Amino acid sequence: MTHDTDRRRSISDAARLAGLLERVGRQRDAQAFRALFDHFAPRIRSFLMNRRVSAALADDLTQDVMLAIWRRASSFDAAKASAATWIYTIARNAHIDHYRKAVRARKIDEHDPHFQPPDQPLPDDLYERAEAGQSVAGALSGLPDDQRLVLELAFTEGLSHSEIAERLDLPLGTVKSRVRLAMNKMRQGLGEWK
Amino acid sequence: MTQRGHVLDDSWYLDYAAGTLGTEAQDVMMASHVELSDEARGRVAALETLGGAMLDASDGEDVPLGFSVEDILRRAGSEEDETPSALPGATAVVDDSLCLPQALQDYLARTGTPVRWGFLGPGMRKAILWRGEHGERLWLLRAQPGVAIPHHGHRGSELTLVLKGSFWDGDQEYRPGDVEEAYPGVEHDIRIDEGGECVCLALTEGKLKFESPVLRAFQVFTGL
Image 1 (cartoon, each protein chain N blue to C red):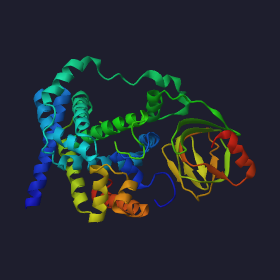
Image 2 (image 1 turned 90 degrees about the vertical axis):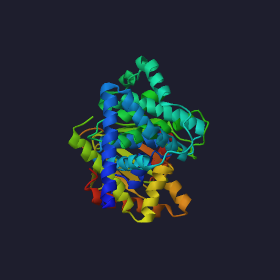
Image 3 (image 1 turned 30 degrees about the vertical axis):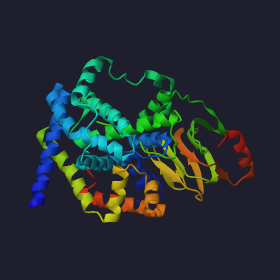
Image 4 (image 1 turned 120 degrees about the horizontal axis):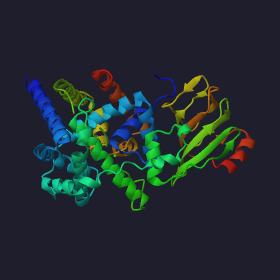
């Protein structure tokens, strides 16, 4: 079945990325880092652009995130998170740190907000972790559209739940209950998310 | 799990995991809660996995990057030795007996915020750490065993995270890592457990509302 084939492919892809990150952490392997760069740098940059960062700043922050990946790779633990999750938290934190500094410097109105990092393995762990990452994506695609949309707006556009309510022109309580329902459903799907 | 307390509404974990909280004080409150509560950490980890899956699934844009991987490797090589100044031992200024979580200690060190205790009421002291532009306050409460905080309501919402010891609100006990969220209109009676002193981190939006005129007058002096 195509679905299974796709799923296998992304699992092996996730295992490959985790393996590359481990090689950077253990051996400072520049070749492995180049492969990670090719995969993640464009994604990090578009993640930042989606959060309404200027192109020039997105380039700067992406470089900072890639440098942080090189430096902190030895603290990556594939038993705890997938490579994508680990890198996501670094990119998110870089964005928040930048944003908070700008607020402190009074350059930005705090009420126009958007802009926060984190944590090598046995083949079995790698596989399991990669699989968990996949089933989250699977759980997401199994959610009703209105719940999935809320989570996508949060992560891809960097909107807070109250900004999501404004965007969708919904009462705050409705957005909160969609978040709650989505999380409950995903928790069931994943057996406590682990 | 419908009982009040212990963990927050899921929208808090979503905003934290997505990096969309409104203020730095909310970042510090949530990071402290997540550090101390296994349940909170599990929820956030799951959401971060989702964030990772979405990052991975996104297509990079067509716009070419304004830099190459060799730029990064060059920077890494030239700056290799001046690596991460471990967060300063500035935590030394904070009293260990307060049991402040690392996230809060880091914040205090990073911003150079002192912990200055002031009188709040009999057996209670407070230290305000941050004030927002709209009257929000991030503050520490330190209370002696058995102290009661009389019947009060809230004009805005308030998050109270236990860092040390425990308190009771009615028959609900709140222990380290637990958060109580109070909304406007919610009335409560807080009593510090007899077992030891209690230290809490609170984030308050809007003044507390006491029924007693004496306590209301008292607010003028305490700044709460």
